[in-house]
View 1: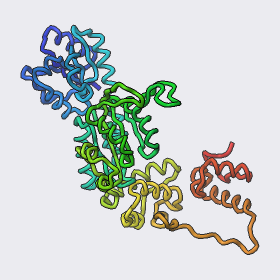
View 2: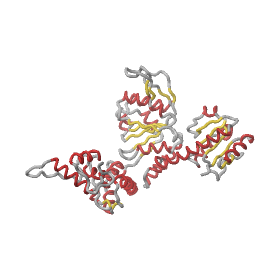
View 3: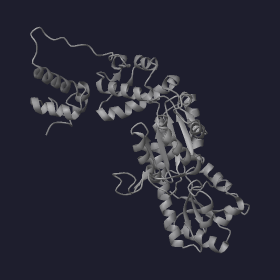
View 4: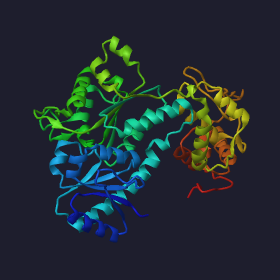
Length: 451
């Protein structure tokens, strides 16, 4: 592939050698017009721009170029002072070279950026918005908004929605669709740690800050510098940490635990919650100023029951992944099965659908998943398909019963131990342990036979 390079250098004596050298390397090079406008038929992969051009035509040039080429990478010539006055990451500036330009260094830089651009495309295909599933009008609106928010310079994004709607996947996509894609993406579950421990994780500590602080530790905000940090379930964050987070958002600075110096970072904060924060504010559990600071760029993920037309897309995706996982040859879902899926209200949202469908893929006996293969479970209720076993009047030998069930599961799965374990509701490791204990081998050994 021939990568396209736009050269914006007002000095002919340096522009001509640069153009010639890059063309010798197989790149397609075009120059910026004298009026500061890029060629209309030439969406570049990389722009090599002199800082004097940006001083003259303004940063709108880079914004226009990124609008046509979202993965655009920028090499700034003679621009150290310019980069100090602006945010290089936000402008897509990834390299700064001094003039006169070392042509060999420029060629190595451009080659590296081309490789990076290819990796960006792969990362976006796997983790970006294209990986999110949804054809419903509500989900399409979410994706359009997320695309605009990802590529702007918002320092904070607020994702709201019920548990299981995919807030973590959207947060990751926002990072991989942004100019920060080459920098870290750090995830923090705010409910996992008590407030003092969470503060230490987020901001780090200085040596001697507390009894066990034998050395300095950098926090997650420092590790995420230049990238994004995802604060999941922010509604559970304590009031003291809320105040410190507000300072990071307002000033991009914080102090380590036990520290006296401010540390400056450039981090996009992506927060998410399934709580009613307005109610938490009324109860005095969440700071209203932090809420308003986060709520500048809110994105609401609708529950699955409000976008039932997306269920066939999820079914296709989960069928493909689970047939590989369980090595099945299922061809699809029957009409009655799909009607049952679309007639359920999905209190657990996409997470529940994924689990229900994985169970169905593992246990289905026919070539298609039918309504009887789909079992739902609600809090406080037993699974639909569970029936109590009757103990014979004379009793049983439990080891014999367990051995018979292991044998039946292996026979039904055709010797596939992964599927047999799913039928028994145990892990493959536990199944192999019981096979050794009872001396059981599948009659038709597959890929998972015992050694």
